[in-house]
Length: 223
Image 1 (cartoon, one colour):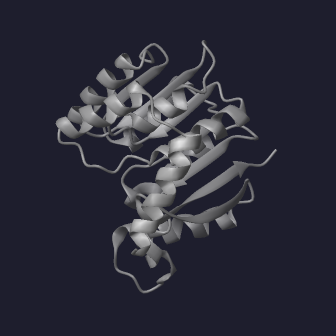
Image 2: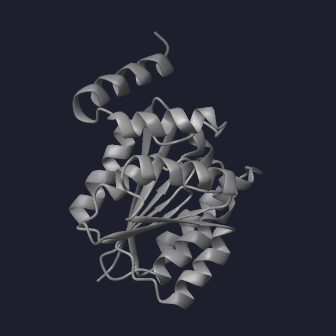
Image 3: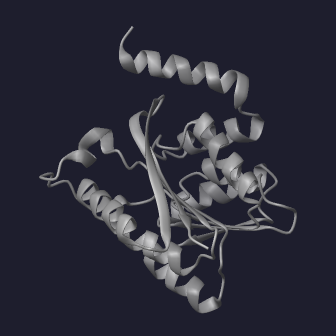
């Protein structure tokens, strides 16, 4: 058995017993596939991790950067109280249409707002609206802007807010200081700036599984 096959089998075992998908989650993936969206949503066990982090945080307001088909959005929104709010920023209108339909199917459209446009523009609008502070941030969009997304997350945070950034290991390439890959260079810059920021306490964890070899970063805004 190859490493990838073994990682996938282990994920399948964990998911079956600890994070089984229900009809709404399965339907969200099916609808995303049917609409031609890329198959890059978080794995089910990773979605459950987001859900548990949001629950543990007691999150009432969540900001997600990168909606795709709203699979991760559903996991996060299910951790909110009845009067909670999740804002998800999506660049592509086609993705947003699919995501809104998936959220409605899951019965979460009253809790979640999907905003379309360049995230850096949408973040500035949120600040102008006084939309923060948010209790939890999930950043999973274009990797080249991750340093700026984290800066905005800190601006829109409160002491104790959690910031989660996906896809930070870049299949190990993040360790290569000579890489010319835009996503790798931006990820390295983001990690370095977080390490220097006195307002943040953070770590990063490598992962393997159905989505291959990658990892995530978790940062907490200091009190």
